[in-house]
Image (cartoon, rainbow, N blue to C red; front, side, top):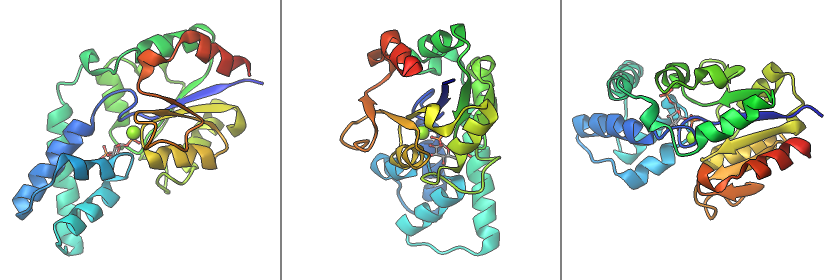
Length: 217
Ligand code: G16
Ligand code: MG
């Protein structure tokens, strides 16, 4: 059966979490409260709207609809400034090795991200050409752990969901991949990502032999 490989963006291909953190922290500080790196863990893989809802819960703040919309825009404007100068040096180790190995064998590759800024980031770091499909926050209505993002990616690749492999760094993302009946590979702490089928700290631990086994399965 033809296999498809789906990559999450933030925390899998690049570490944009640090820039999301700076932008959310700036907004929190402007609203008069602190936002810590530990709290930022809750934001991984979560949509921008849901992140702001959580941030306001942390700060014990309420917002009118107008304020909510303004703050979402403000956070994104700041985030875009932080990512403006991103380049290939921000690609996480050995990600290109895996992408190139898949490409050499004509295995279809998709992005499955919650971010609405996914495509410009892939362009900035020079990886856009590897992707046959991009499904991101602009294309889906239901956020991870709903499987919509990955099911749409499989559809665009023309591959059965059960023949897809997903790389994810967020609990909600692993749950989404499992709900889509895909092979979930957790990138990061295996205690946090314990529901993943396979676990690795990062791509330096993933051999091309292992990828080949997934392709041949
Ligand atoms: C990423 C991040 C989240 C972020 C979301 C939306 O998801 O992990 O922290 O809130 O995108 O990003 P944006 O505000 O750019 O639309 P993923 O799925 O790539 O890990
Ligand atoms: Mg992620």
